[in-house]
Image (cartoon, one colour):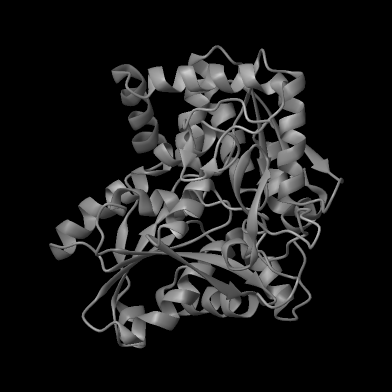
Length: 398
């Protein structure tokens, strides 16, 4: 149900708070705490110290000279979120939320995870800040990402496989929301993407916006001007909104989100929400979702466990509506080719999620002579090597 008639947490028609009354107190408490701490000097100093000293920020903006020369068009820069502690952009948001939860007096973090990167980041922050941690992960994803399951356990987290529904990311989110309902007092739900009920899409965006803040400073120093395009992969959309946010007002900078087409947007084996979805309400928010003919949330598919979410964050839906950002789709085959291409060309093994963004850059860069592209390399690909080898027909098991 819609808890508030006000426009709070709305991005055009998208966003809002569609959720059971049992969770309203929790999100109201969270919003109140966030509004207080986001302007708190001490909180921000603590968070910056964690990001810089522990997570390794600022992450590098790297000129991909070999890739640039090979494609023969735009100058390509890579934002190296893969170099962060835990290997992806997820740590930016998790350190922020975990610190916030601690200030709120919470002692336990719960989180959903798809590829396992958000789960690993949450388990890491919980270990660092001395909190309990439980991670919900689709049973299928547990198999696909066995190494990350071990990492989370190693860091002291309990990992709960979710067998309901499609046993992937959306089901892990549903399970988390159920668990949070039953244990609000000592527990914070550390949501990993710019989705869910308000204030989550705003909180996660604000913690991830450090990416575009840095890109802006770094590209000005390197080139003396802003890029012509910023490209990022989109599942729920946290790395993409992080890379886009500080450029939204810079109308000459094209913002391109890359969805997972899976086996193609003309098939049912896809997760390209903006390309194939319709307006709906799910997981506490109004946005675009992949749905069947009856309006039920459709099963989605991608080779990437981090992109197979059937919806998209409400701010992305809004940026699409107002034509400020463009959302394209890349197939499994194209993403695997790009995964191998960047590895061979620059000696950087990207996450299969990030490889979707690289694949689109490979398509458009040759026709962008004298232009500058920044690709957000949201994570590193160690976790994907076994799966990619299997995709190429090698008999390899972790």
